[in-house]
Length: 341
Ligand SMILES: *Cc1c(COP(=O)(O)O)cnc(C)c1O
Image (cartoon, rainbow, N blue to C red; front, top):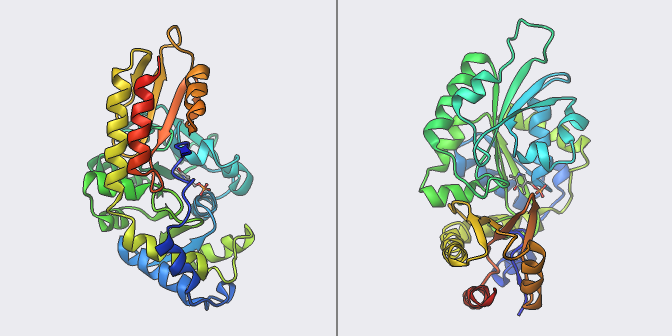
């Protein structure tokens, strides 16, 4: 039995999802006549109560297209220092949009409204870059799957409105936040100018992300997606997986969250563990007391048992639970953890 907990992106389609893919009605989406892609876009837009949506091959491309549309070269966006758009998109903010990032020293990937307000450059001070966009991430990836307080997001929205800033949500794992906090997707839809969501994380699809916004915004996003090389043809096979996941794989995220908490409880009791960060969803970030056990030998002992987790740098390790992490694997993993010393 191999247990892969490096990310929730490692899942393969379930048989139900594969059936949906194999029987999908497809067309050529570059001509916008793939019925499955059109249906997915409509379904996700409705789910968030937003006007329109566009299917993308990756979350990175969806975020990058949004940033391109919300900014002009030379401008600046505000995000937390942990943000995916800053850390893990290959420098795309500057490469694609000629934009810089004003990094906020937030907590677990989350900023306060005051931090955001203080990061806005005065628009009439022409020496500094013009601030034009605020990017939020929920749940936070590098922040350990933390969920934002919706009231804080509302306050930041008001600051954006008062300062003429666009407001983008990197919602790669928004599904986890919605389930963990029992929140309404439409409340997010009414707050943000644009939202990107991933189908290939917790929802278990092989490929795909969706960008949401106003009709006009999405019409413009179509050209940016083309420029970035993201126009796909019979992508309805992939969209069908997304439709299936939306119908079948959202509520079950609770199970991933429960397993993550149970893993956390076992980790807390191990004497070589220095710290386990709070666990709100399916991501567990923790540190070892390396005077007792080095991260390297801990990872080695897990590998001996065919269990993979991943290092995050600076002594931090990460475990992510997901759809393919079965109950059997879970019980086995907990047992193995308790034997390590
Ligand atoms: C995974 C992820 C993305 C998108 O990643 P892709 O691998 O390009 O699909 C964007 N933002 C966050 C927070 C993510 O976790």
